[in-house]
Length: 541
Ligand code: SF4
Image (cartoon, rainbow, N blue to C red; front, top):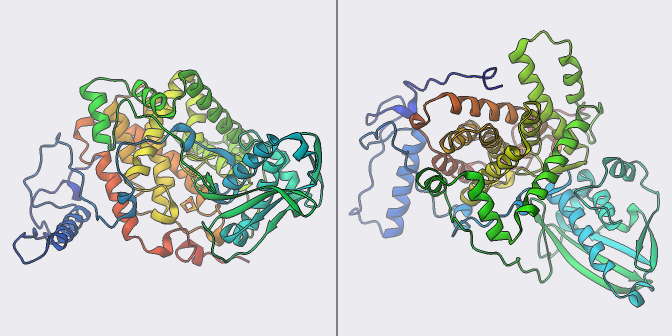
């Protein structure tokens, strides 16, 4: 595969390699701020940061150039950047928080609500029998953004499925489809001694405006006639994460190998020679308190859900839900491969792209996906997993690949953002592609430096990518972008594994910082608002 997709990188003469002040190619040299110009400390800090940022963006430096093998220092970031303010202390994210399984197309409006109602189902199932005997109904009220945009995201059917006791990770796609196809059909759910009939009408689209604790608020109730037996207010806080009234984050242990940036991680890997898989597994066990067996079982389930999604997507032709009337492509691409005359390279690219399409289309259908890092970018890692299976990669190596991919996602979450609403699509598909490059490299047995370089390369070439979904649906450009993200992930791995690793000019921390900076400065029209770019250019008939 790497031979088929080999790309020869040539950075000679490129802007990032210039060594003169004010080279003219990149723009004028940026003056260094002076500490003695009458600015107070804060003003000085801002001026220094602005100058630093300008120099970074221009690709120029007034400093003596570093040796080719020296790491590029990470640029300082604006202290106003929310994603930076939130990044304190070592990375504490766990695999279960990161790879979340549930229905697409939206982690906050579909997956989160199903996780909420499934949580509610489990809570009420534990109530005493004498209370449950009186139960007559289960109701869910959607508020704020969930009510305003929930219809298009399938919030109601996902909420009903959870309330019916269907686990988000394993709910069959046919069941979710049947809820949408037969909206008036009653479904039985047994809770203790009571069996209740539920329909989509039990999911109520309530007030869109009000003084809500969170924009995505919902309440779930167990009723006995007009009497409320049990009620809980929930919040779908983004990325599939859920909270509820009185929520307290779970206690966590301290990581065995604390790190906040790639440079600290690399120190353990390169200087201390600790294998990446071993390090990340030790951290996961220390932070989550889970056993090695539990962690491998979880990753195997993630892998299974991803492969099931790709394999389903490769066999289904359909018009995807919503006003765009977008036709799926994955199945046709697979069929046409059999008679393709594109040669090995063309077939390899088509195959990987079709895998990205397959899971992206499953997400658009509202079927079960895994956030990696988000629902919109959920096609990329499954495409890498499927192509690694094509290469007969051993399962143990694929598990390690999942750990490496998660580490890249954690670094981006901690030091920049994973949200299209905060950073545009570079934060979703860009990070997904970067994770995919790391996963491919780690699974194929690359060195830590190559894994890091592959992740850097993939992220670098998504910087500035905007989020402008047409009609607010996670379809255009999202699905095709997953296909490109997967192809770019393989390209990044191929480049990183063929170049001299020490000669890569830009390091991962620098590119993650650049993403945070770009996120900060990106116009709000390009942050999932559907107010710019493709969203206003594509005409729907
Ligand atoms: S365009 Fe926006 S919604 Fe679509 S994948 Fe990218 S960030 Fe997500």
